[in-house]
Amino acid sequence: LKANNARSLWHPMTAPSDSLNNPPTIITGASGTRIRDVDGHEVVDGVGGLWNVNLGYSCQPVKDAIAAQLDRLPYYSIFRGTSNDCVIELAEELRAFFEPDGLTRAFFTSGGSDSVETALRLARQYHKIRGEAGRTKFLSLKKGYHGTHIGGASVNGNANFRTQYEPLLPGCFHIPAPYTYRNPFNESDPERLAQLCLQALEDEIAFQGAGTIAAFIMEPVLGAGGVIVPHPSFMPGVAALCRKNGILLIADEVITAFGRTGAWSGSRLWGVQPDFMCTAKAITNGYFPFGAVMIAESVAQVFETDESGRAAIGHGYTYSGHPVGAAAALACLAETKRLNVIDNATARGAQLFDGLMRLKDKHDVIGDVRGGKGLMLAVELVGDRASKSAPPKAQPGQVQAVAYQQGAMVRVSGPNVILSPPLVLTAEDATVILSALDAGFAAL
Ligand code: PMP
Image (cartoon, rainbow, N blue to C red):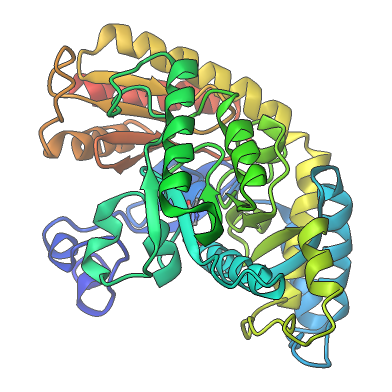
């Protein structure tokens, strides 16, 4: 397995030469919050798969629901005149769940990038139906991550995810993210920084012309960009600017929906009602590739009252509404509520955040600790604390390797060591993660 893994498989977001020189850890089994590799080494999964395995790996009701649905109806399309019962039931369930947020319709996809693409496309169509075809541009945050399709890549804030695929969608502009550790304003106070970023957004809207902008897309807590938690005033401020200027607000909740931040969604955490909410990942917890875009009642009304035919939804996938994915999602939603993982995410998140702050006192390689909202945390490594210089390239990878040997899988993204463990994490698991990281930082 180890010798052959780079010969026939390209690993995403990895240089093929890396897979040859530095073979990946091959996972062959998992149960609860633990994963096991090909050598039989077992560790706590500090990253929950890829921010998605909220309920852990042994969720029997989800496995049972998938098996039962496979027996009953493994697939039927929901295209042009056909539907399936399981996906209708899921849409009703999600409607009940998200109605307090003003979101009443569901459009199903097979993952996060598909959900983002869906929202971008429907946002443009919404403006066309309303006779504002000039609204085509998209705004987003500089450190935001929105997936890999050409639309999503165009709104990605990190240029590393964009430049290789240029030319991208024209008319996408990125404004500074409320990232207190480093920002162009040199402002470390979260509230003042939020105001400065909002001013930058207002200026960009004026510069572009409000009537040219279709939507603003943001993650309520930025994930891949290094777990950036905005000040509570930020997202409501964005929502107000969008509303004032006729711009749709797309909440990219591919990571944050279904409990990760210690709230049911990031939008609910900040008290914002978005026009579209992109979800995927934890909607099926890794048990099936699936996603959903929730759509505001006010947006749905525009599509549903248009009699000119312009509202025909020309968007959809073979797997929009896969019944097995829908069965998995229904079971995951029920388990997420039954196990009260939201409260556990808050408690374990606080334990990890406090522990990381203590590690910061001990290890000079830690520049910044971010989190404080559920089980989304990051440690930013530095070469030098005073100048906040970037760490030597090998260091973050070394933290991951040592922590893994000491019992915890953590993930490295640029200078950041990221934690996003299952929401069913125990206090003991959290202790294992912290001591494994302590060893990892000490090794530097
Ligand atoms: N949006 C966000 C916020 C994400 O974190 C991700 C994936 N990490 C995506 C979109 C893309 O999702 P997927 O990888 O399922 O296509």
